[in-house]
Length: 541
View 1 (tube, rainbow, N blue to C red):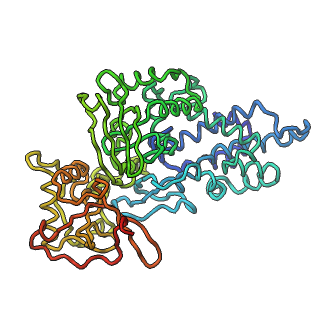
View 2: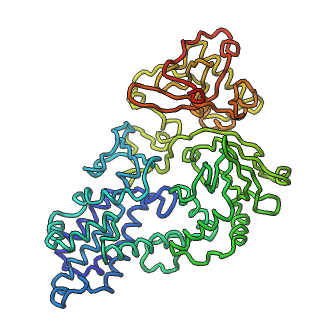
View 3: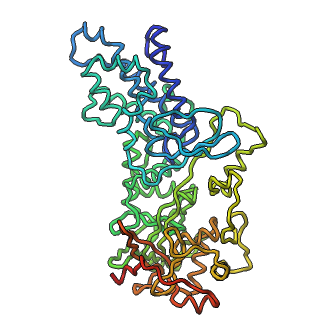
């Protein structure tokens, strides 16, 4: 289809178009186009980019380019401008692997080879790779690096051809860099083609003539996907005064009108049709498909959200965390304040009743969204099992472990591979684990990466890290049960988490955790080190 739309001789097709397409496919492999939005599955980036190319070439047929030129120039430069549209469409998201993702390479036996240098090389050789989305990625920053990567994709003769027209080259560079105000008609074509591909993948369009095969999403799935995108891109502010949503570890509370208005506007801009104009219709759709937690037969909850120096009473929708972030490791930081149900809602009983009072301050680790293999057929050489290798228990191994080197024992009751014993209190199990580890000197203390620090006020247990070390899968339950034991000191504001200032030679940072005021009494027989001189209680500064 691309060859037909380009309409160039076979020699030009092979050397200019096909070589670029093959180089691009080799570069992006089976990487996704987004973490939880459009084309988020394996191979999504390639599918999306090919769709944008097809859409852009179709749209280009409706324009005489360059605009405002005489007939002779339009005829002479027709193929050049067509190639500019083609290559800009192909490259518009090429920077995502470099800026948005971290790709780790492995050989056929599963030995780690290090991070892929996406700036200067393509993935080569047989083996495997793991994809993690960067938690610190910046929206649209991937567009700015496309010119740097263009030499890996576009053949040198084609780049020279584009450079033969300085006016076109300036427009082309602006288009692939996302500088739409300077990209002119090429930028408009790419934006329109991109929007068509995104809308089609998310089920917003019924026109499948220019799309690769994709399932059409029902309304509630489109609403859920849109909400995930708005949260990921911080277009729905989270966990602060003036925010529109708060996450307590088990539920996401979204201000009903503000959140749904933002969701409707986002979906409309993406080209979705059939989005209800009334909020109650959207509430019903989400409730019917169990996307949100109902309040009896209603969708709305009345809650009080407060922190140290502010408090608001709001009407909110309640979403189970598992529906918004299916991968627990992809969830954001927890709200450090207090969320309480207000009035009659505090007495409401449902099958999935939200916790009435939540006090939290923790931060999950970065997400690991996609794991896929480079080879078309998995390798079974030397009995290597990629499914077992990439399981969660193996994913945390250090390079030296996979190489077979002897590793010193780490403090453990390893809870990641087995559920907690329902007959025992997880909080008490955690206390016993800490006591045993301190007695046997298993824990690293007072160091940069330590989970435990001796401070002037007692013993600081870093949260959530220390709880994840104990039980990665059920750490939130463990932390809540430990809080119930009331062995820690609460802050003057009545919250559970203390903040400590870390002062180093060159910089300052902060850490948070539970403060055990009399550790020698609680953990009898333990010899503790002197207080860490680099830590000071933030409230005392």
